[in-house]
Length: 498
View: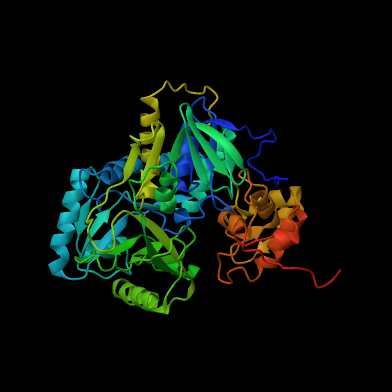
């Protein structure tokens, strides 16, 4: 008997026939799903992991890029600048934390200024607004603790929570009738005159259109349909994260001038919305698409390079290290020097759309990439806008950001708002319960973390972890099914008391 799994907030049975199936629940896939939900279409998203944003979209810097660091004339450049024009409004509509911070690309020596001039000229060609080269006094005015001779200032760059953005896009699509299946990898594809037959561990689904947004696995998903045109090379990027006291040191992303030999990205310094600073990413080819290890040599190099830009970082504590992976089309032997985004309908398989090689600035470009998919589908058939489409989503209140009056009102109405589950991030039982009941059906500890920040503070889950397990049990998850990130990461293996 097939296990019953939550697919959305709706209770009606999941149909087997869809107009469009999106494969991949990262930021691009969820942006595509939301954009498609504007129209009268039957929609399904398939995600192989136990939650949305579990792959590439959780392991990046969360920078809103302005578009000056991508080659002119490429799809990367066009969708980056177009995405910049959309993403701030979209984040406001969806209630996603974000901030327009500006950004500095810093040259430590006069000899690096020509590279800044090149970046500015490239950005001007791409249509990046407001770029300016500033001197030492200009750097200090924007970021007092940053050291450098010259810097390229990009006033329209910003930061956003990438996983919250991804989840919000999907939840908006869900409330507009789309469906989501988690822990549902695509395992086989049948080709039919009227479309595709998709095999998964959760059942068989037919689709007139398939949109492949599978990130690191987009080449493998395309191959299931007999499309052998692509090869993804996974590149690992390692990060260090400081404690929240870093908020007093830096509130604007700071990048070094990129090295000419592309041997290392240089230590990017990116503040988070909560006050941490991210150091990284590095860049190294790895064989395994799941190799998210962190290494001491890279950590040491990130620190050394970061300390040159911001010496004040030496006094800060580092609370965590992690790694993300990029789906590059550039092979490690260097045979392909520049690989652009690929967004195209397959010539071999009509109505199968591939989005391949979507690395940075894919987060910023996601709304524009979604619009490209609509253009491809709309060129083949009439798309009827839904008159009842809702572009926003219900607000998700956070105790940590409420004023004292609102906190008191919520506690008076519901005692769960007064029970602190996560001390580091000030998360209450009411927030955790709401996260466990999320519309997409994710119920792991990491899924709760991405929706509430439980476990992201200084103690890294030492205090809140047992409390989260208690709440998951109270919400109907058997102890043996409580996991960190889905099947294979279960937390408990039996009882020591009857």
